[in-house]
Image: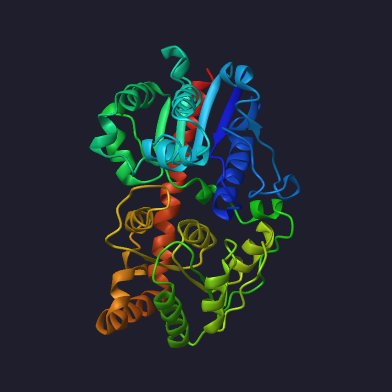
Length: 389
C-alpha cells in the first residue's frame, strides 16, 4: 500500500471552476487509487476570501504544516492548473506574497521548487511523480533560460512517471523530454459525472434546459459582450439570465442590470451555481471553466476572448482559444475584437447562431471531448499503476 499526495492549486478566492477541478481529483482517485492512502494538499491555506470549510465536500492539508509527512509520500500527483509554469510562480502564486522582502521572495521560490518541483528529492523518488491536467502554455524561451526553472522543471518533466498536460500546446512543449510517452490529457473537470456534482451542498440537476446562461468576468469590453449576448439570445428566441460564477463588482452589476440581468450582490454557493448552469440550453461567457463545465454537461457554450491576447498568466484569454481549437469547436469561439465594428459584430452573431442551431455540431464537439477524457483516464491509470509499484 502506497501513500499518494495529491497537490491542488490554492484558490486565491471563491472559484467555482477550481472547485470542480479538485472535486474531480477526489472522485477519480477514489476509483483509481484504491486501496492506497490518498491525501490532498495545497501549498498554503485557504484565506478569508476563499471558501469556508462547510462549503467544500473535502479537506486540504497545508504542505507547510505537514512538510515532513508530505515529502515522505510514496507518490506525488500534481493536479490541474498552472502549478509548474514559471509565470504562476512569479506572477500568480508569487504575487500573493507582496509583503515579503526580496530575501523572503527568494526563500519562497526556493521552497516552491522544493515542494512543487521536488527539487531536493532523489531521482528515483521523482520517478513516482505524475503531472495531470495542468498547463504550461505561459512558458516562453525567456522562462527556459531561467537557470533554476530550467534545471528543476526539466528534471521533473523528464523523469516523472507521467506528464499529461490539459492542452496540446503544453503537451508539445514537454514532448521532447518524454520520448515516446504521451503528454496530453484534458482539463480535470471534464472527468466529473453529473452525479458527482451532488457532493456540493444545494446542487440539484435541472429537470429541463431552457434559455441562455450568461456570465462575463474575465475579458474587457463588458458592454459589447453584454449587448452581444442579449441580441444572440433574442435571435435564438430564448430568454437570457445571469450565472453568478464569481462575485460581480458593483460597476459590472450595474452595467449588467441595464441589460435586464439580475446579478446577486453576494456570494452564491457552488451547488446552486452549478444547478443554475445545468438548467441552461446554451451558455455565452468569457470564462474558461464556465465553458468546461457547460460542455461537460452537454450544454453548447459560446466563448468570447481576445484574439490578440498573449498567454502571460493564468487569466490569459489564450487558454480559452486553445481549449476550443483542441476539440473542433472553433465555430463556438468569438474574438472580442469582432464586436468593435458593425460588420464584425453582425458576423459574430451569425457565426454563433449558425453553430447553436446545428445540434449535430455540438454533439460532435462533445464526442471529441469524451474521446480525450477516456484516453486521459487510461493514461492516468497506467501512470498510477507504474508509480505505485
